[in-house]
Length: 561
Image (cartoon, rainbow, N blue to C red; front, side, top):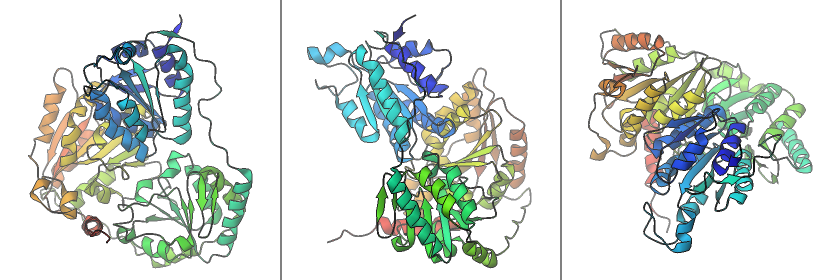
C-alpha cells in the first residue's frame, strides 16, 4: 500500500519512539486522524480539550523523550498554545500538529469558519513560529517528506517543540514513502578546538580553587547530560547542590549531595556552602526571579563557570560551539579530587529532627500530609508537583534512589500537573507509579482530564490540597480574588467514573483518614485514586512565606526613571 501525507507522518512519529499521541478532533483534522489510525503501533488518545492535550504531550515527553499532539485549526491550536509554550520554556521536544484550511480557500479568497474573518489564513502558522524551533505548512504533497523530516530533525536536535500544519484536503493525498534513516536525531557536535580550550580553562580554575562546588540545573535533562554531570561529580568529589527544577537529577542518597540551592529558602546549610565557595561550576542552570527568590540569590559571575547547552561562560570569556555533555565528560577526565566543600558541609550540618507523628484523630495539617506522602514514595515513584506551596512542601523531601521528581518551574502554569501526570503515566514503564500534589485552585483548571485517566486505566495517586484558594498568590499579594468556590473533590470521582470507571475518591480531614486512604490507594491499580486533603488556608510552609515576600518585592519595583 502506498503512503499518504498522514501515514508518512505516522511512520516518522513511530520511528521517534513515540507510542501514544494526544488528540482533540475537529473538522479540519478528521482525515488526518483517520490516516494516523492506520498505524497500529501508535495509540491515539483523545483528551477533553486542547490545553489538556498539550499538557499531556508535555508530560509524555518528560517520560519518553518526545511527545506529539494533533488538534484542529485556530480554535484548537490557540487553546493548545499555552501548553506548547510551556514545553518550549521547559525545553521538551513535542511535535505540534494542526489540521488546516482547505488549500483552495486562500487561493479563491474564501473565509472558512474557525478563522478571524480575514482572507490571509497564515496567521496561525506565523504566531506559532514564536514558540517552536521550526514550523512548516505542507501545501503540496511532494513537499511533505522533507518538511516533516526537517521539523523532526530540529525538534530532536534543539529539544524544543516544532509545528506541522497539514491542510484538511492533504492528509490522505499520496506522497513518497519514508526513506530509511539510521537515526532521526542528529546531535550537534562540539567544535573540537573550543571544547579543548574550554576544558583546559575550567580545569585550571578548578585546580586553583580552594573549595569548588557543583550545581545541577534543569537543562541537564533536556540535553542528556545527567550522567555526564554525575561523572564530573565523582571525579571532583566536591559538594553537589541542585536547583529546585533539577531535583532528582542527582541522587539524593549520594554522599556528595548537599541539598537544594534556592537562595534564602535553600536546604539547611546549602546556601552557605554554595555562596561561600570560591568556584561554582553550574551545569545547565536557569536563573529567573523564581529560582533566585526575587533576584536576591544571583550567583557571583566572577566565580562561576556557567555551562550552557551550547556554550561555556567563564568570568572573563566565553566559548561557543561547546556542547554541555561533551564539556562535562571531558572535564571529568582532567580534574583532581577536591572534597573541601563537602567536608565543610558535613562539619556544619545539623542532624535532622524526626517529625512528630500526629494523633490519628487530629485535624490534618500540612506537615502531617507531607510526612505521609513522603513515606509513600519509593524507588519506582515519580512525584509531580503543581505550582504553589506544593513546590515548597516537596522540594526538601529526601527522595530514595530511583525516585523521580517533575516540576514546571520555568513556565509555572497552574493546572499543568493533572494532564501532564497522565501523559507521563502513559509514557512510563508499567512498574513506575505517578503521584501528584496539586492545589485545589490548580485542580479546577484541568480536573476534567481525570476522566481520560479513568478511561485509559492509568493509576496515578492525586493528592488534592483543599485549602480553599490560591495560597501561593496570597503569599505574594493578598486579595479577594485568591479565593475560589469549594468543590466536593473526592465526590467528583463518582461522576467521572460513570459507566465503567474504576477511580477511587477519598476525603481526609484527619491524620488517620489520610493514612487509611493511602493504604487503600497503594493496593488499587485499576484506575486513579484522588485523595482530598483538607487543611487550613493559612497552613503554609515558612519557605513559601519568605519566597513570596521576595517575589512580591521584585514584582513591585518602581519603574526606572
